[in-house]
Length: 489
Ligand code: SF4
Image (cartoon, rainbow, N blue to C red; front, side, top):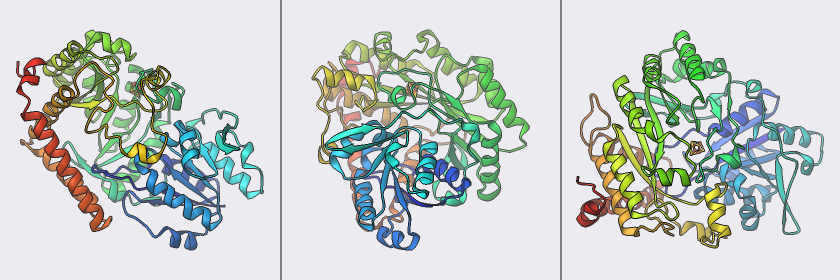
C-alpha cells in the first residue's frame, strides 16, 4: 500500500526548521514492513499537492499536526486529498490531544492518538485487505457529531523499530549550527517523561511512561548522518534524556566506545545528575544541557508539580559550569494566580544561577495539561472553538489571557529584559562574541525565506521586525518594573 505523509507548513514560523522525526519514524517502520511511503515537508517548501497526489497515487494520506499553527495548510492538504478520493488521518501532538476540536473544524476520517508507528502499520495492513479501519486500536473518528475512540493502543516496544531512513527527507535542510558545531541534527533516544508537570501535555500524550530505544539503533543513525552529511553534533529531541545516573553512564560509555566523533546536547531534569556526572557527560561529548527550572518560587514549583529539588537548582548550574558544559535555564512566568512576590523570586533565581543562557516564556494553557483542565473546569478559560479564534492568540508575544495576579505589562517587561540580555550577549562562553546569538536568529529567519516565496518572506520579515521591536521596547522603557522586580540589583 502507498501512503503520502505531509508535514504541513507552519504559519509565522521564524525559527530553525526541525526534521519531522515522528513522521520519519512511522514512515521508516512502514517501509521496513513492505509499504511504499513518501514524506512531503511543507515547512521547507510548499508543493503543488494536487500534482503530488496524481504522481504518487497514494491509498491514504497522513498529516502531522504538531501545533495549531499548521492547521491552515493541513486543512488545505486534507481537502485536496479527500477530493482525490483517499482517506485522511491526522496525527501529531495537537491533533492527538484535541480531536474534538479537529473534527468540529474539518471533515477528515481519523485522528491517530499518541504514538503512531503500530497504529499506522495496522491501518496499512487493514487497508490492504479492505478491512474496517474503525476497529483499529489507537484511532478516533467522528460519528453523528460525537467523537468515538477505538481501544487504547499499548505503546510499542521501541527495540522493534528500524533505524530511520534518512533518504526519505532532505536531511541537509534541517542541519543547523549550534554552539560552535556546524551541522547539528535532531534525533531521539527516548519517548516520554517521568515528570508530571501541571502545564505539560506529557501525562496525557505519553501517559507518563518513559521508554528508551536501543543505543545501537541510535548510533547506526548517527553513523549514517556523519558519513553521508558530515553531521558533527546531535541534539536529543527527547522530552527527557535519561531518568537515572545508570542510564546516563550506559549511554556515555556507548557513545565513547562507538568510535564516532560527535558532540551532543540534551534536555533533562534538575536532580538527576551530580557534579561528577556532568564531567562524565562532558568527556563523552556533551556540549550543552537544557533544564526546565520554570520558577524560582518554591510555592509556584509545588503548584505546577515540577518535582525538582529546589535546593539543587543553584548547584546544578554551578556543576555544569565547572564541567565546562553550556547550561540553559528555561523559566515560565504568568502561571495561574502567580503573585508579584513569586515573580520576584523567579527573577532573583534567574539573576543568581550560573546558567549560560536564561530564557523566559509566558504560561500558555494547552490541551492535555492538567492546568488547562483546571482553568477550563473552573470557568477561568474558554479555549478557542475555531481555528480563527486560535489564530488570534499570541502567547509568544503576550500573556493573554493573563491568569496571574501580575500586571501584563510587568510580565512582558521582565521576559523582554532577559530575552534582550540573552540576545545581545555572547552566544556561549568560549570563542564567541556579543550579538552572536542575534546573528544566529537572523540567519534562521533568512533561511525560512528560501523556498516559500516572496509573500511568505515579506510576512516573516514583518513578524520578526514586530517581535524585535516589542522586545526592545519592553526591555528598555519600563525602568520602574525593572526596579520593582529587582532586575537591576
Ligand atoms: S519535565 Fe518537561 S517533559 Fe517532563 S513533564 Fe515536566 S515539562 Fe513535561
